[in-house]
Amino acid sequence: MKKLHIVGIIIIAVAIGVIFSSLKNTTTYANFDEAMANPGKEFHVVGKLNKDMPQLYEPTVNPDEFKFTMLDNNGLSKNVVLHKSKPQDFDKSEQLVLIGQIHGEEFHANDILMKCPSKYNDAKSQLNQVQ
Image (cartoon, rainbow, N blue to C red; front, side, top):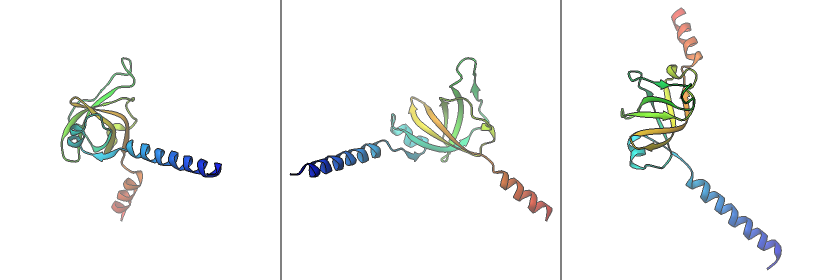
């Protein structure tokens, strides 16, 4: 075999290895029930902030820990520990996507995505009121 063929086979083998390792680390959208059934696996959980429950953020004690309660899309409520500071405009968010995993009875999130009310929707509703 020529050296070029051997190098080509090695490159293909490395590429296949990279593809399989990236597929293994992918996360999926789920609810709290599915996340509880698979502890240690990372999920994206979609839901809404439970505004009836208290939020705990003490930046003087631990600036990288924010605790709150979220309702998933099935209505299941869970305590959440976000390992980041409290996001700006968090209370105004319409929808949350938590990225993390279940530890015991709490969902520990490493990251959060927020869908906030759009300024364009507000402008549209004001336009409709004028007409």
